[in-house]
Length: 359
Ligand SMILES: Nc1ncnc2c1ncn2[C@@H]1O[C@H](COP(=O)(O)OP(=O)(O)OP(=O)(O)O)[C@@H](O)[C@H]1O
Ligand SMILES: [Mg+2]
Image (cartoon, rainbow, N blue to C red):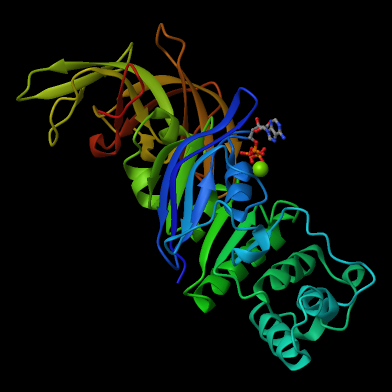
């Protein structure tokens, strides 16, 4: 069991506040992903949980026990860093066994744990090798193995895959998903900049910004129902398009008009979003209009052809000088410089008020 409870966590350096008012509950066995812009405090929060960083105020409980004054080594928490410092002269086996040897663990127990971790991480064939004879992905798995053998209650990962190339990232990501299944009682927190890692690994995602939590939810909750513009644009890639908009029509037949947009968008199945200041539409929710359904008109500025899809950058023909990106099928007949009309399912539109909150 490993239930984490963070209450009003604050961390500051002098008068610089890095983390502010962090409240978070993570039930046993859950994998939570922290995302947010560079410098928002992800690593600081992780290091605070590990005990490598002293918090300024607030409380952190693990299974109901206050951790504030418990030294890092006694918390039952293991952390895997972005730069995995393996001992270069030791074999994979020795690297994984080292911490337990120092702690005076009995040899048969060390052997059992190392072999079990190697099995989970598919490193059994490499136990006799030194790190320089391994690929980057294998080295990172050894670093994870070193953390597993400690049999932690909580596993912390700080961007563990960011040094790997694209193919290795995918392979190691799948390894981590498998690891989670094999350690169902271990609570995991995973920091990443990678959208795919966040979406695929997380039970829940915590979006941080400037040291505060913006929203907590399952990947699909954040994708479908972002609490505000920041989360809306942070989750999903390419980012959601945002355009200034105003509500029109009556309560009975609500509509919305993008400033300078093609035609008012009728919203049959939802109440009129009063107080709306902007409209959000994801690139993947835009399609080429077939008839009178266009909501946006403009000219194709440039195209990024990705094969399966193309990212079509459109300069809108509005006085606002707005631009949108549409993710269209890769085999479509879109031409650079040509006019284009775009449509979207009204159910997939997002609305925000002047403060950026979802309405
Ligand atoms: N010892 C320190 N003294 C002062 N400020 C610090 C210290 N350590 C970190 N910071 C600041 O705290 C903020 C949060 O840093 P942190 O490393 O937690 O960010 P992060 O979200 O992990 O960013 P990244 O995605 O780039 O890894 C940054 O603005 C950083 O400059
Ligand atoms: Mg960091």
